[in-house]
Image: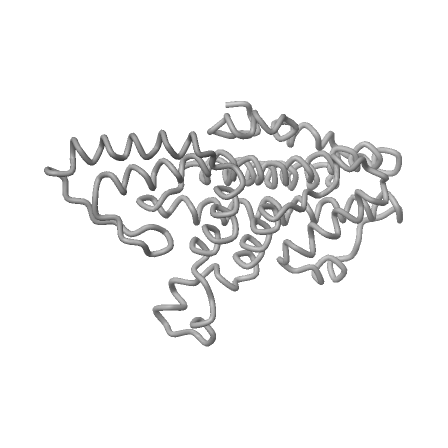
Length: 271
């Protein structure tokens, strides 16, 4: 195991680990525990960026015989949209099947745009920018609000069934009947709507939990894309370089959509 092997292995483990941590934190995020949103955004943006840069470096090594220069890699910066598009171009050149290409639904695009804005510091320090009155902050959007608008709402529009809504409304009414006379509630949703009753609290939490399962699926479909592509490139790269089996680090992401929705805690170590 030479220095190149170790660097590739360390980077792949770091990228995959961040994707797993981000998927886990996303499932725990809600209006009352907003810190999980930031945990998720940090981890997912880092995981996707480093995965894509590994893809581009391995593609260069396979096609050119050596790794690209630092200058060439720096031009991508932290723009996840550009990095994922570049990774998809690699998949196209490798003649990957449609199923193995970058997923590009409205929800996927919302995820990538939100995380890309976070990664490029457009929204990463939003709260500090508000406090300091930073230039241009008036035209920016809280990254959590952006996530709700670009990801959660489209997910609910696409997947929230009338049957699920009826069940949630019934549970909310029961909560209001039992706890309403005795419980004082005052929260604000991620997008600023006042929650001032047990019934409203129950309904919002139910909608959030419903949406999170699907949001996690869409996020992990992106992880599956980069992980599968890295595995294929790692295999091709063994002809010219000593390359670790990168697919081992991303193995947990090569699962079905249903598995993505059902599993709540994610670790590349199987725990």
